[in-house]
Image (cartoon, rainbow, N blue to C red; front, side, top):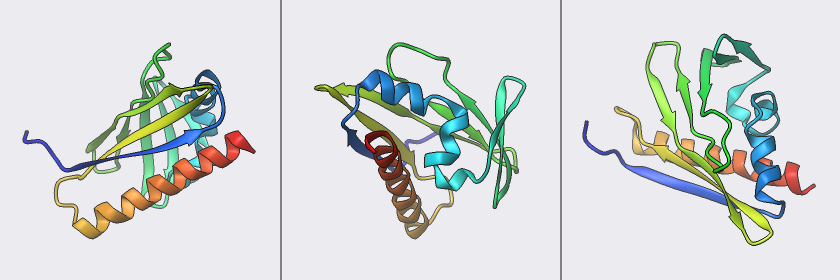
Length: 132
């Protein structure tokens, strides 16, 4: 598979990295800051399930770890999987949250830009929640 266009979006959060990781790694918190995921996130075996406007999605998260890795896979209704690299890294007494967005096959430039805007908004919400 050839490489794809990507954008890494980030936000600085004035809270210790361990606290940011603890909050962001809890699937039940996702609806509070990730608007695109719709409603409640519920356990589904080793995965998690969420109802969205696009239908039911399954999510699989990286195992809890001491490195701030929040990677996750989004399994779409059509069976395709979107891999999402995400990290929380220490930044002084606070944290930096990094989210890499890959342009999916067949995605227009406008759709890719829209998705980047949605991720940026989600990261801004995460920042507001944790700093508020």
